[in-house]
Amino acid sequence: MQETSTAAIAKVSDYFKVLSEVSRLLVLCTLKSGTKNVSEIVESTGLGQANVSKHLKILTQAGFIERTPKGVSVYYQITDPVVFQLCELVSHRLSIHLEEQAQHSIDLKSFQRSM
Image (tube, rainbow, N blue to C red; front, top):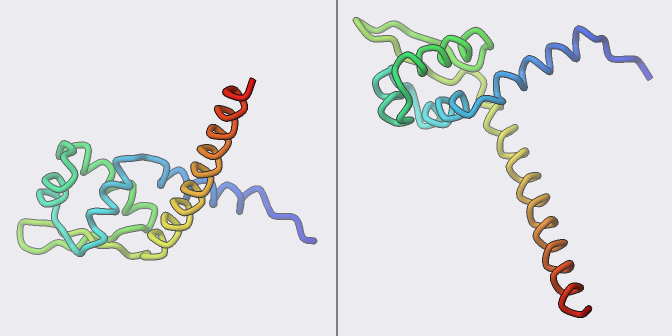
């Protein structure tokens, strides 16, 4: 089995770091429905304009979105829709994990009542 290089692992880590910020996920979710400008993203997310601009820059540099100037506005759109499949996969796994934890809690409470 070939060893994975540290550089490759670092790239994967950087990819997940971009997705580890709640505000960036909010911005991505807002853009899932289509192209938007900063004002529309601010209105949809409830985040401040400076905050949205910072996250848009990070998402653009990471290749998740692209910016297109149109007149006096700049519009943003998703360039890598696979990110939503990844989020769905993670959400599904978290849901299963939480269900298992809830079942363990029910089992423990049942055990406590039987004592």
